[in-house]
Every structure is written in C-alpha cells, then in structure tokens.
Length: 86
Image (cartoon, rainbow, N blue to C red; front, top):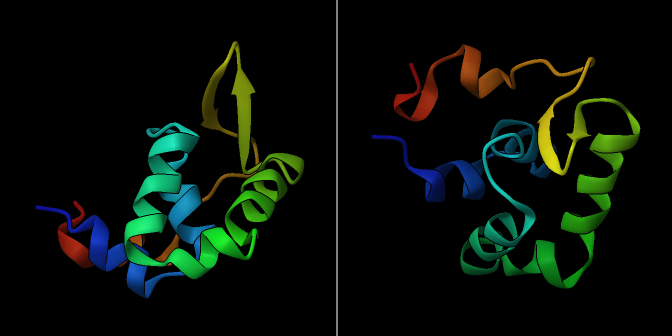
C-alpha cells in the first residue's frame, strides 16, 4: 500500500505534484499538504509550484481535468519503486 504521508513528507513538492496531480484535484492536494507539511501551504509554495508545472507543460488542463502534459516524466521515487509503488 502506498503511503501518501511518507511521499509528501520526504519528496519535493514538484515531484509530489507531478505524481498526484493527474489523479487528484487541487483541494485534495492542499488538504494532504495541510496535514503533512503545512509550511508548504502557508508559504504559498504549493500554489506556486502547481502553477509552474502547468506553465512548463508537466501538467495540463484537458476540459477541466488535470492530465499529464507533454513534458511529464515520472519522478525518481516512482521509477525507483519507493513507497510500494509498482
């Protein structure tokens, strides 16, 4: 079972958003960071990094749904199969 708490606590904001962005809406991501790394939310880093991923093509909006963009690549923790990711 994947531990989202461990991923959020141990990985970069960009990597977490790249991994979870296509499957979770922003409210869920905000809530996960609020519970596990509140400083990322209160500093504005979460919103800033989320917007940046859209601008750089890592994520994109497709009819109101977030999908992987043309510049998306799996974060290292995914390719290394950390946290029970298969």
